[in-house]
Amino acid sequence: MQPLQDITVVSLEHAIAGPFATRQLADLGARVIKVERPGSGDFARGYDTRVRGLSSHFVWTNRSKESLAIDVKHPRLAGALQRLAASADVVVQNLAPGAAERLGLGYDTLAAINPGIIVCNISGYGGDGPDRDRKAYDLLIQSEAGFLSVTGTEHDPCKAGPSIADIAAGMYAYSNILAALLARGRSGQGRQIDISMLESLTEWMGYPMYYAMDGQTPPPRAGAAHATIFPYGPFEAAGDQQLMFGLQNTREWHSFCRTVLQRDDLAANPAYADNAGRQAHRTVLEPLIRDTLRQLSADELGRRLDAANIANARVNSVHALWAHPQLAARGRWRSVETAAGPVPALLPPGSAPGAARFDPVPALGAHTDAILQQLGFDDSELAALRAAGAIQ
Image 1 (spheres, rainbow, N blue to C red):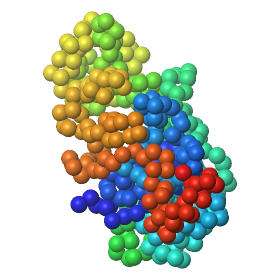
Image 2: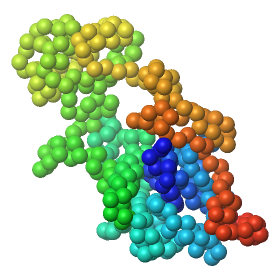
Image 3: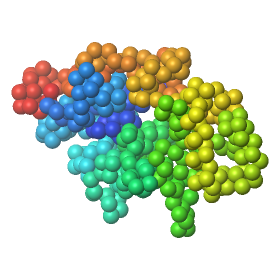
Image 4: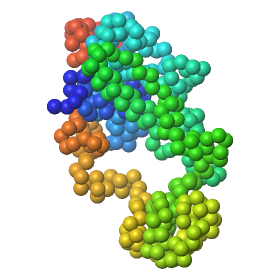
């Protein structure tokens, strides 16, 4: 039995934040009805064609859902959408501010019909405040939340590769919906959830914010190296091969000096004993460490780090990640069907084998007729709506 198999979610979603949240609900067995525009659908369908003609973003965040492609503003369909949402357990939307209310899908309207309804609104800046109506995309929120100020090189700020503001908002939407379902199980009462991308990413900025509290100097941008712990980052071995490693305490520093650098004198120097001292003397230590490590092959450096019990990692490419031996050994890969055929998909973290759903990524409108028939539309009505371009 999957934990959410009796839960129905109606989602007016696009891009990443909303779809990522609801895909995780679908992973746990929830029925997720994805409402899309006829003709184009979720605009993330058109971001790229890298998955055998399909969008990488869309394939990642939309498996195990049903696609209902309808014109939500069509007079014959507005009431149907409201009935569908009101009979659901959860409604998720990341439309423009105020759009859901105009469609009759606001919390107050739906709760008057179904007191147990949970409505999750995802937006850039939240449901009120002076920035409520500002447009928000992932990179803009990375900028607004100060993330770019601590990410990149000394001279150039850099965004994160993945859409972390969207992902953060999707994760908080997912966890808040699960909490609301638990609370409803005790009280019978639903609730409204207001998720802001800005607040989600600001929570992830907690360490640099506290580090710079009361006007202190913020963490510097340090490329792939840790900004405030040294040594911790990528280091080159012979042949320009890189390994990533990090030290956390004095014991590891002593082990690193003796086993990896083979420099007992550095281990004995009290000026370098703690991280604050190593940071203060970084301009002296860094070239010394790098010059020593460049004389070692990557294999030898890895052996010495392991012998010293220093945490280290390969600097993998995305291609190497597909073939990561640890993921394969733990059986974390599954297959999911798409309109372009089966593609690999990662078993969600924490899921036991067989616990997560891997139903197909839906084609646009694949479930429109079946869902509308459940709402009482007959074949002639569906044909008329399709002829008018109101459904797909």
